[in-house]
Length: 262
Image 1 (tube, helix red, strand yellow):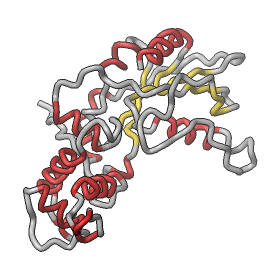
Image 2 (tube, rainbow, N blue to C red; image 1 turned 90 degrees about the vertical axis):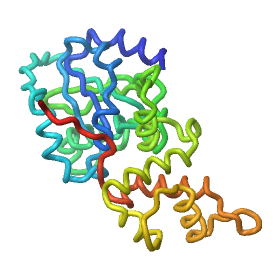
Image 3 (tube, helix red, strand yellow; image 1 turned 60 degrees about the vertical axis):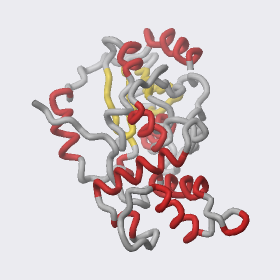
């Protein structure tokens, strides 16, 4: 991470616009103070990615909370020779590379007579796919615009354990870092707050529970995730449960509590 951070800082002088990418399921928790420190007075746009997994119910909440921070980006002088240079920043696995590929797909569409462009940035379900700052990638020809992909920047120390759990649940932290039963326990807590039917119906349970082992036993038995002797494999069940959430199969909602404006 520190090597990537050094590269980012050294390139910022030649960047016209920074796009900070956050995961819309954790719009507050995926805010990275390191990004704020790095970019300082650079022109910036915040994009809340993976909106298809957070649902539209929270759109009004988003708008109310961030409306004071929505500023018009000033018209940037476009150098006809070198074009505009954009850098995409954010935490690991918030969709930076996917966003860059989408920009290129749309921006270069006319040049390719309607045919899709190939992906130029590697993507994946786990954090850490992008290992270093990429070379400038052309995402538009008229006007000329280039974009740089960057490795995910993780906060060196996350003091709040709940924030750590939320980031792990959405995949910003590698799966082997935190016990998946702990993640499943927190996810069960959030589902009970929103609507227990979100897990009761798919896992064919008759009543809600606050006991994560009871839920995971039911999942393990119902999906055949059993160890020798027919013992439920709760870790395999927890992984299945978490993956269901990540795919949007347990409802679409955010994990953060958006603070109300005073």
